[in-house]
Figure 1 (tube, rainbow, N blue to C red):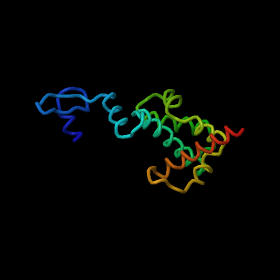
Figure 2: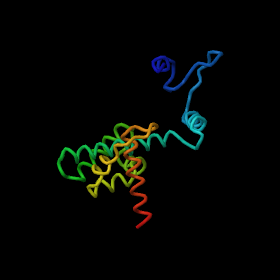
Figure 3: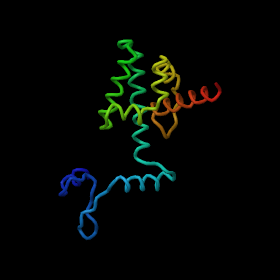
Figure 4: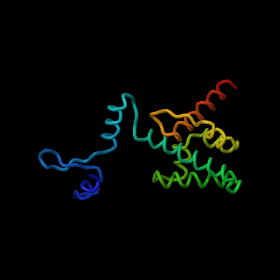
Amino acid sequence: MVRQCQELPGHELFQYLDEEGNRQSIDSADVNAYLREIGGDDFTAKDFRTRGGTVLPAFALAADAALGEDGNLKRQLAGAIREVARRLGNTVAICRKCYIHPEVIAAHTEQALARALAREAARDDRLSPEEFAVLRLLEARQRTATAG
């Protein structure tokens, strides 16, 4: 299906031919409207990018810590952010500011990230084990911040 869309004339990847054979493009507003419709809430594509932008570095950083990689927390963090930026097709600054949850960075800096993620072996059927572990980490850190 994607290949068929790529073969349509023009530069837009997401497009289709309607009943009359006219080319119609699909833009971000169309995608976000669809997500709201099927999600039953005000979700956008950015929510999914943020979810990925938080889970990806959390497990990259936890893996570095578990392997005893380097030990330089700042270098590990910079590498994880660069990888997220590459995968999301954005700049390092935007990824750090807009897509990676600050509590993931804080937990890594406090050398608590790997332990926190390893404790969360349970699973929610709607989430991957990695997503579930990051969710639990964020919930626990929020409870601690609220109680403190």
